Image 1 (spheres, one colour):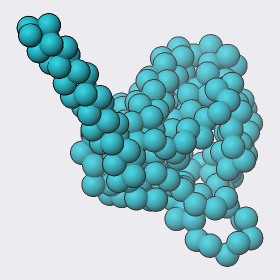
Image 2 (cartoon, helix red, strand yellow):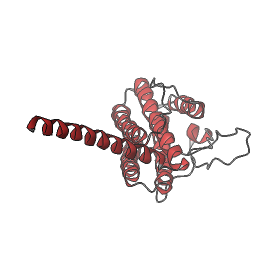
Image 3 (cartoon, rainbow, N blue to C red):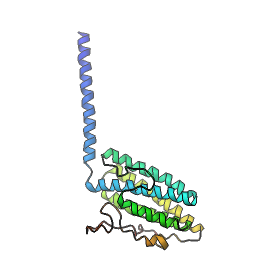
Image 4 (cartoon, helix red, strand yellow):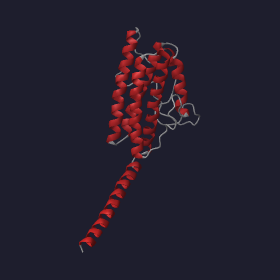
Length: 223
């Protein structure tokens, strides 16, 4: 009789275990489905934008050997990883299908090429490229934070934005040591004329749809 009872108890534990796994899995699916299209777009966008920053800094470090680029590229890798964790959690496709430095989807490829071209002119221009990237990142993250209602996503975006402010301060400090004002809108950087920011169609795509341009708008309070 005891053996029979043990057998029944074992079956019930097995059944309850399966039900628990199913419940957890269902919660995961609900989480993945709970994001709006805009939230999903921003997650994917920020993942690739962080890769853009990482790759530009890796390449400029190879060119100039300035340690600030190496240090911040490591930080940008952590930013990429943080966004990827959210992509996995919410079941959003990762736009970074090739982690090779300098390889992007079409929308980011031109910007990467232009930033590298500008950053190779001089060390000052390379540092200004960093200022440009961080100011843009801050502006985009402000929009991304406003687009979501999820606390975990807001927290990650906020952490990323704080990191970008630190990076911006570091680039400005290095420029000041070279006698240059921290201005991302002069010389070759200003000539980029890049007109896209945030998810949406590529600039000058000819589809007539506004893409929420913002690359050339500094964050509020920055001078």
